[in-house]
Amino acid sequence: MRAFILAALGAVALSGCMEDGAGEMPGPQDGQALFMENCAVCHGEDAKGNGPLARRLEKAPKDLTLIELRHKDTFPRAKIMSIVDGYARSDMTGPGMPEFGALLEGDLVPFDSGDGIQTPTPRKLVALVEYLETVQQKR
Image 1: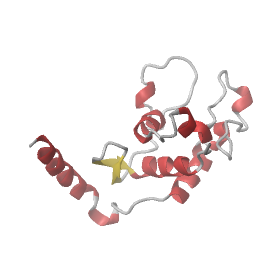
Image 2: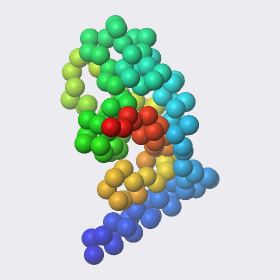
Image 3: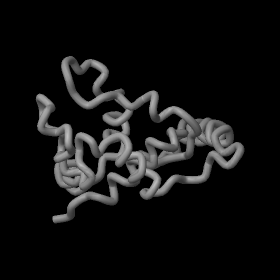
Image 4: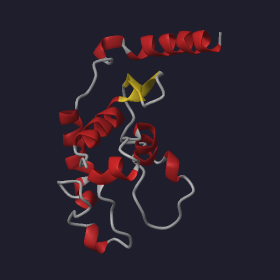
C-alpha cells in the first residue's frame, strides 16, 4: 500500500514538472557546459581537482573522476546531488565548496537518484550529475 501511495504522489508531482516541455531530460553535454561555467575553475576542465584556483584554496578540490572508485564502483547520485546543492554541507564551517542551490533552481525533471523512485529534480542538477557520471575512471 505504501508503495502505491508513493507512486501516486510521484505521478502527481511529475505531472507538474512535465508542463511546457520541462520534462525533457538533460544530457551529459548540458552538464559539461554547466561544469565548465561553474566548477572547472576549482576542479579543472578535466575534473581532476587542478583548476586555476585550486592552488589558492586552503583544501584542495577533490578529483571528481574518482567518485565511483571511492564508493566501491558505484556512482552515488543522491550523495553527489546533495553535495552540489549544498544540502550535505549545511553545517560546514570555513572555506569550502560553495553552495549551488540557487544556481540549480528552475524547471524540474523526473530523476531516479538510485532508489528506484522518480523524483522531481532541478534540470541543471540532473545535468551535472549525468556529466560527472561520464567522467569516472574505471579500474
